[in-house]
View 1 (cartoon, rainbow, N blue to C red):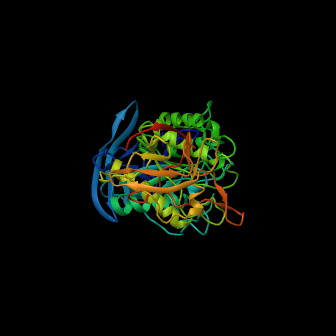
View 2: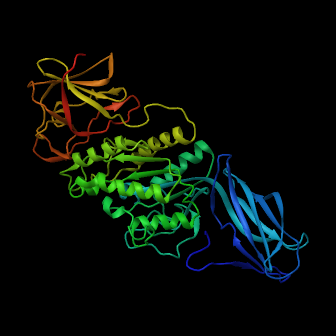
Length: 484
C-alpha cells in the first residue's frame, strides 16, 4: 500500500473545530498519478472520522488555483467506524492540481496536497550513460511537470525513508542530491512534455561503472535495498507506479567488455525476467548497443554482438546503436549533444509505440545475411533489414579497420559500392578472394593511426536513411555464392 513503509500509517488532520480526520489514502505534494487509456489518473482518497457526527466530507479540486470541482463523499458507519472512500479523476495535462477538504460547507478548508498531476511513467536503468551527470552535461533547469520519487544514488544502498515526491533535476546534477534523475531523464521528459503535453514520472535506476551482474535482482528478495535492482523497485512501488510502467530504457555494457561479456545474454535473461515479473504491464524495452572504446575493451565486439542477439531474441526489445555519438575526452561518456541525439531516437520509438506517431526506420538496421555474390568469391554482400547508406566520406585508413574476418584479422577491401536495386545491401570487393568465412563489422574499440598511436575507432559508420547507425556485428557466418 502506498503509505506503508514498515508500519501502517494513518495520517490525521485536526481542523479548527477539533474534529479528527485520518486518511488511509491521499495524494502527496508533487505526486504523479499514472493516466489510463482515457487520459485520466485515479486519485483515491479514503479514511475515517475519529470524532464528530458529520454525514459528508467535501473534497475540493483546484486547477492552477481555480476551483473546478467539489466531491461530496458520504461517511458510512461500518464496524463501529465512520469511513469514507472516493476515486477522483485527474486529467493528464500540463497543469497542477490542489486537493483540500471540509467536514462542513461553512468550515475552513484544509489543504491535503498541492502540485499534483497525472501523466506517463518511464524507467531508466544501466550504468553512467543511462544517468548522464556532471556539470558538462547536466542542465540546472526546473521543469515543473517532471516528477520523481526519491533520489538516484550510487552503490551504497538506498535509504528506506527517502520516499518523498519532488520535481526532478531541480536540485542539482550529482548523485545523492534531492530528486536527482540525470540529464537523460531530463531529455526524455522534455520531449514527452513538448510533444504530448503531459507530465512524466521517471525513476532512473542507473549507477555508473556497474556490470550487468550488479544490476540483477536478488533471488531471495527482489526489493533488497542493498541492490541496485531492489532500490529501483522499492522507489517505484513506494510511488505506486510499478503497475503503470509500460516502457523501460536500458543503457549498459561498457563495464562488460573485459569480464562478463561471455555470459551477458544469460545475465540479461535474469534481468528481463525480473522486469517482467515486477513490472507486469511492461510492454516495451528500448536498449542501446554500446559504442566502441571505453576502458578495457578487448572483447567489445563480442559484447556488442551479445546485445545485437538480445534484440533478435526478444520481440519487445528495440535497439539503437550508439556508435558515432560524440564522446567526452575520456572516450566513455557522451557529450550533452550526444545525449540529445540518443534520447530523440528513443523518444521516436516511444512515440511510435505509445503515442500513435507514424514512423519507419526508427531502430538501428540489423544484418540479416552475409554472402558471396560471384563464383570466384571475390565480392561480399552484407544485407540488412532496412535500406542503408554507406558513408562516402570514410577514408582508406579508417576503412582498413572496419571489417575483420574469422581470425580477427583486418580485411583488405578494394572497393565498396551499393546498387539501386538492392538498397538494403552493401557490397565489398575484396583484394583477396575467398578470404572471409565469418565477418565482423566494427573493431573492439581502439586501433592504431598512421603514427602507431592507439585511437578509438569513431567511424564513419553505415546508417539507415534517417542517419541512425547500423548495429555492429561479430563473426556472422558468410554464406556461399548468391546471384544478385
